[in-house]
Length: 589
Image (cartoon, rainbow, N blue to C red; front, side):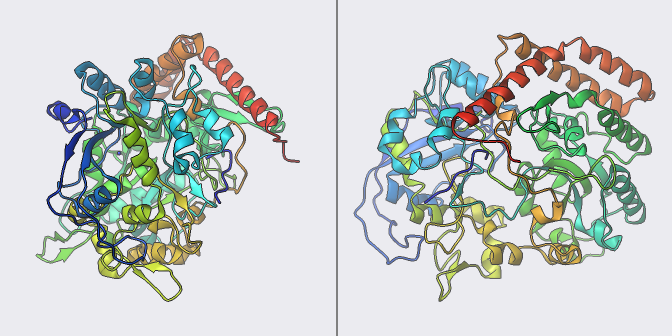
C-alpha cells in the first residue's frame, strides 16, 4: 500500500472559449478499445459504447493533443470519457481564470493554478467530499490528515494537487524544483569543475561564451537569462533563500537554528545575501552576460529562446521549461556548413547546480520527499453536466492499466517487458516519446489529472518511465551521461548534492501563501510586496547606480508593511506545527 509522508500545463486564445461547452456524447461506429491493456495483459474485445466528451483547462503552458489521438481513444473506450485539454497562452493564471469566469463558459475539468481560489469564491467548483468515499483510487492519493489540508473555509475539498505524490515511496530521479541550470557542454569545456558560488557560475558562463560565441547554425549564445513575467518572477526574486542554504518555503525563510519546536520566520528580501545576489546580477548585466530582454520577454518568448539552445544558464524550476524544449532539442537542425546536428547531441541539455552564498555552505535546493501543495489542483466545475462521471473518470485514471497507458504507452509499441516483468524501451521508442509530433497524435498523459509517481502496484516497475532507473539513464543523451559519469552521480538530485533532511511540518509554506486572502493586513502587504518587487527588481538589475537604486527599492519595500505579512506567515508556521503535534509529530533530536 501507499506510504504518504506529510510534505509532499488559457485558452489557446479567447476564441477557444466556445470549446468549453458542457460535455457532449458521441457514439463510435467502431471500437479500438482492448487492443492492448497497457499492462501486459491479454487482448480483449469490447462492444462499442457511448463516450462522453469533456473539456479541461489547465492554467499552465502545455501542448494540445490531436483529435483521434491513439491512446486517448483507447482510454475513452475503457472509461467512457474523452477529454479535450487546453492550456495557458498569453496570460497568467489569474487573468485566464478571470476571462473564463467572465465568459460564463467553464470547462468540465480545470486546474486553475493561482486562480483556483477565485473559482472557489465564485462557487464554480464541485466538492470532492462525497466522491472520495465512492471512488477509492482518489481517496488513496492522500492520508486523512493530508486531505484535511485541502479543505477550504466551508470545510469542503474542491481540488487535489496531482504532482509529487508517490505510491509506496519516493523514487524520483529528477529535480523538478528550482536551481541554477547550466548546459553540460559548458561543464565539459571546462573539464567538469566544481561550481558552488555565483561568482564561479557566471565566470564560467562568461568564459565559455567568449570562447564559443555561436551554435553550429550561427546563432549567438546567451550566457544567462531569466523571466520577470509576473507568474514566473519567483525565479528572479527568491534565489537568496536558496543561496543561504534554506529549502523552498517560497515566501519566507523559516529559521530552525533554535530547533524545530521554535521556528522563526525571516524575510529573505532584505538579507545581506539578497543584496549580494542582485548586485551580482547587476554586474553581469553591465558586462552583457545577461539577456538584455530578460525584463520584458513573455513566457512564450522565453521558452522559444530556450528551445534554440542559445541559453547557457538560467535559474528556474525544471518542470516549467524542460518539457517544452525536449522536442526541439531532439530535432535535426542545419549547421552553417550544411551538415545537421541536434542540440541534445552537442550538449545543450541542462544540469542543476545548488549554488550557495559562500563556498562550503550546505544547501537544500532539492527535497528528497514528496511536497504537499494544497493551494491548487484538479477540479470539477459546476458546468459539468455529469460530475459523478467526471469523478469516476478521474478515479479510473489511477487504475494501473490505464496509468500505464498514460505514461508508458502501449506494450509492444511504446515499451517492452523483459523476463522479470521489467518495463523497458528501445532507442526508437525513447526517441518517439521525445517527439512533439509523435506525442500529439499518440500519447495521452492527461498530465494535470490524478497520477502517481513512485512504485507501480506490481512492485517491480515505476509509475513513471523517468523514474525507472534503467530507462532514466538510457534516456539521457550521450553528453549528459558523460557529465553524470564525470561527477560520479546517477540522478539529477545527486547532481545537486543537497542535504538529505526530513521535511518540516510547515513545509512548503508557499502552499499557504499562494492562497493568502487580501482581506487581512498580511494579505494586503503580500500583494503590495509582490507589486513592489515586480517593479524594482528588474530596475536594480539594470541600474547604472546599484547602491542608490537598491536603497530606493528597500525604502519602497518597507512601505509595503512586510511585517504584517511576516506575522501572518509566523502564525501559519505555528498552526501547522501544532497540527502536526496533534497527529503525534515530535521534533527530531
